[in-house]
Length: 341
Ligand SMILES: [Zn+2]
Image (cartoon, rainbow, N blue to C red; front, side, top):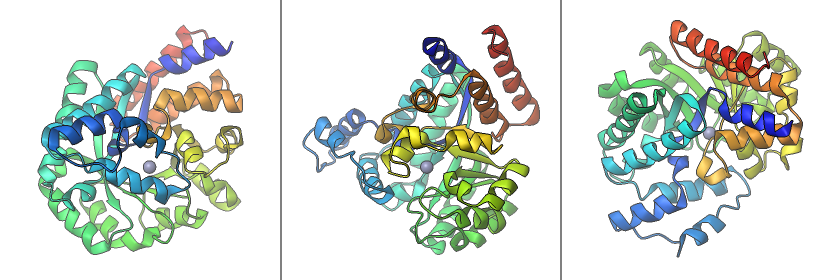
């Protein structure tokens, strides 16, 4: 039975809506790019670097994450990183990806915005033609930086407006509430960009409320602390606001002590539109199917949950209505074929 469920989870069509492309850099690729670009790393070997992935909280992860990203210099580097993730996503039967990228991590090091976005977009275009994976880019502002820096980044992005699906907000949540970026998000909204934000991961449920009210986001990234506030939970459920949950990330960053204590089942039971995602798969011990398999095992979820989560992933995506329906039909056909509809 577990084997059947695992096969279903692996094979089902799915969308990934919470993946930081810089967080898909595997230690092997970090070392290969460091060598190619003559970048000195503070780690002696791939194993040494992997050993450093024992995080205690979000900040301890971010410190290594930014060090890892320092090996990305050329357009080809950004292409290779994105390509490696998309190949892995294709193997996990991901049909649609909405990918975060952090331009400020790179422009602060003197890398041109064009270098970053050109490399990532080229890999996305190749994945579409080779594997039929649709996708888009969500540009994230680093919330530990200032509003002024966010506006400057938006300015740099304007020539590439057509390549952006939306904008998001990531990095250190505590002490950097959503309202810090209310004006930036208002401007992005005028530009017709979709809006999302990380909230309620380490930060309090109130950050979810202010992200909705002041930033006017359409999805909440993480949002697992929503359940601490029953009124907020009812509102998020009623309005069909999706939460892009990342179970393995939550364990690695100590949001929950163990996977069997994760609130995924409670979020589903509360009627919330939950999705499963990998966040920073190279750092958190797994890609999207690892997240599905381990979470289902730990919480005893079943095929009905699998179908719901697969449907949620497309229903929460920023896809045109006809495209969305096509993907949802694929999910239904897959489960009907498996005799699980
Ligand atoms: Zn994230």
